[in-house]
Length: 116
Image: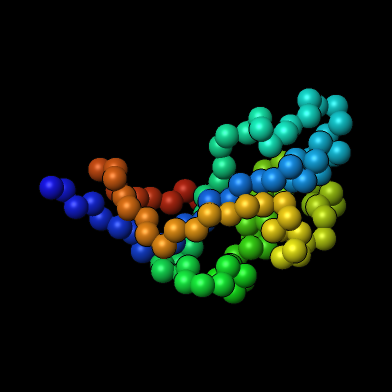
């Protein structure tokens, strides 16, 4: 039996809810509307190891704003169009699923890619 290595990160999968797409649809009225049902791919974020214990707000305190901005930026790069960010709005616009174990099943080494 092969035992695969785990990496020293937790992961959060972020799934936008319909209000997120409603916001995007209001900005880009010239494009076809996007609805939650139209989307089946979501962003995942690697966080510090063994982060998830009990309280999601406390656990994501350092990260939710960065995640929120990244999700908004994926739809619109004009920050003037962004709403006022709050934890309440984050939870109204996104579901998230947490995992404290990330298992690496690939044979290739891990690497990071920097963006400018």
